[in-house]
Picture 1 (cartoon, one colour):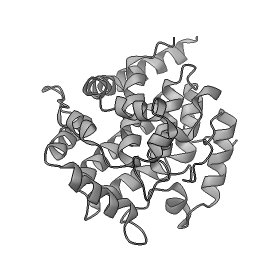
Picture 2 (cartoon, helix red, strand yellow):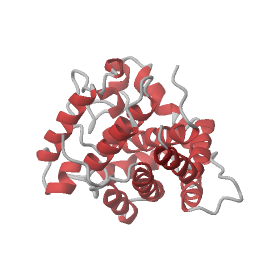
Picture 3 (cartoon, helix red, strand yellow):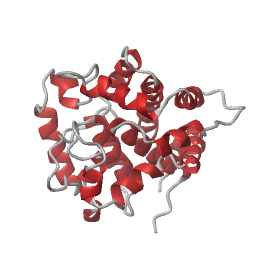
Picture 4 (tube, chains in turn cyan, orange):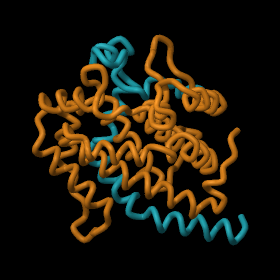
Length: 69
Length: 205
């Protein structure tokens, strides 16, 4: 890794320091985990029933197939 | 097991939270979690202010009211106050060229829509979820891939969308969501410019 790239990574980490703390806040509160639980663990049919009407399904995260990553 | 840097975990969590809130009104469990968010007292950043606003708005909200708020904001009679699609913001119409370009990029990234789902992928919630996925997947996308996706599909319109959300007359909790989202989009734009000097000059794939 060249020096310029290393410096830029350090600058980015420093800039995002507040975000790291904020992310911890969200995770600790469980606020972000709610989405992951909905998307990954509930059967599709159950999810589809959660928010009828506008959305065919409740959460757009489940649109995507994580397994292909 | 991929070890994410703290700042990237924070980004992924925040994208996931925004995706959740934009996909539908928060359920009682999530609302309670939002009420419990307590930023550090010595943090005087705009992001910290946004968290405080969100926690305060959540503490003043009831789940039944939030369902109505979400309905009026994003669904409405005919359409809601805010239309949360990239195509709408970029062309004035739904399901236009931005959606076609997005679908091509999602395919290239190995992300696909599940069967039986009709909602277009350029919904703001879908884009936030995609970024969360790119950041936190077991094999995360490179920073350049993340930056490319953000620059092509989110940066041109999502800050404007979050500003509109703050100004929507029906918005209560979602005013705070809009403020948080706008601050976060600004942070992401700046962070990508720091880490990738050529950011903003991304060529279409």
